[in-house]
Image 1: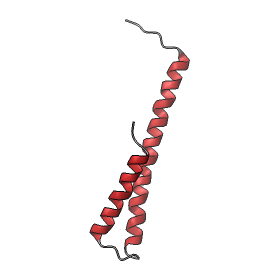
Image 2: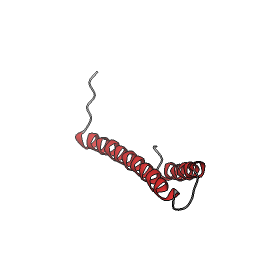
Image 3: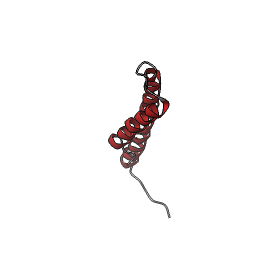
Image 4: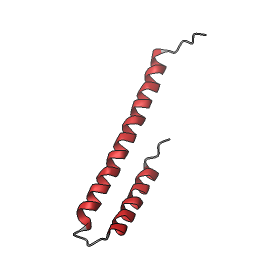
Length: 70
């Protein structure tokens, strides 16, 4: 069975998928940046490894909460 999809509808969904992918990519980059920033300042702030990792986890959880995948 062949289904006709109007080009405007196709472009809408195509753009929506691309926007979603871009959002996920930016979210992932933000999480990587958080990891780098906390690692960079953990020595200056005298944070031990466990505290640094907990801070990274908490910050990344907030990112995921505010930039959901769906």
